Structure formats: C-alpha cells, structure tokens
Length: 181
Image 1 (cartoon, rainbow, N blue to C red):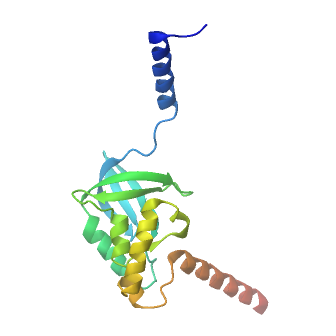
Image 2: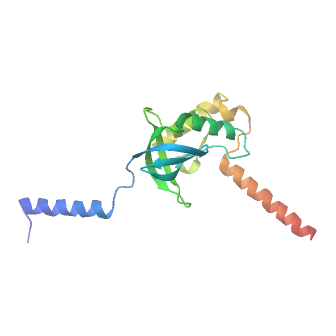
Image 3: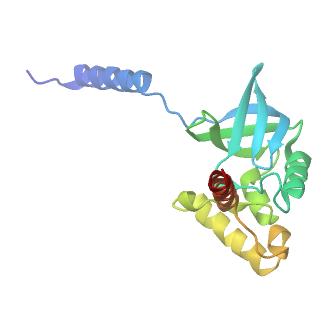
C-alpha cells in the first residue's frame, strides 16, 4: 500500500512530531541573571527561580593561586554580576555543570570571548575544533603577541597544566613521606 497526498503528509508530520518529542533539541538558549561569580569561568545563574552553575564553554581562567586569578574574577564580575544573560548550553560535564556560551544582555559578543580578548583566559585545546574556538584562538594569539593580561608575565601556565603539576607535587610529597617512615 503506497501513501499519497494528504495521507503521506500526515504520516510525515506525525513522524516529525514523535522525533522532536522523543529527542528534544538540547541547544536552546534561555535567559537568566548572574547572581554570583565562583571563578573566572564559573557563574551561578538564577533561571526562573532556580539556581544553576554555568561554566564558560571553551575557555579556562586562572585558578585560585595562579597569577591573574583575581583579575579574571574581577573582570567576570564587572561584566556579568547582577546582569541578565542569554545562555546557550553546549554540553554538561562529568560534574553535572552546564558548559555554555554566555552573552550579556545588550552585547553582541560572548563573555567567553571577552575574557580571551582581555588576556584573562586560555582557549581549551579540546574545544579548538569549533568555529568559535578557532576565532577565540586568534584572539588569544593577539593578546599573547601584545603581552595583554596573563601574557604579560611569562610563563603563563594554563589551568589544566597547573592542576596537573599540583597533583604531581602532592604525589611526590606523599612518596617522600612514605620513604621517611
């Protein structure tokens, strides 16, 4: 039996409806208000009365104890705290934190991009595949060439390398303590 005309159109519409209900689009932007800045690249956002942690997708700001940590925190607070934002989720990480593009209300650029441009964030290596991250990598290069922000004091150690070195130092101390026993 071959479907024709209206019957075929009805079947297609019903099939599309079932697909969209079963597999909703995860990348729909939503609005919120930044209520706290927990790190240079980590925000607490109020969305319809609930609170969500949002990590800025594709970038890494200096961690506590690293040079320029305070400046990255200050700039993120200055640009976003108590402001309305548009959040475009990209993915949820292993800790359940939503990684997203964040645009301040009234701005054409993403907060993620502004921090890289000001030399207060690195572009994460695993995210360089995306078009945005390639553009941000160019901005990072400009900041680096002009010694802007964290690039003013070499060596600028990326947060993921900083954490790795910290873990290795802790392991070395543990091994040394075991040898002394």
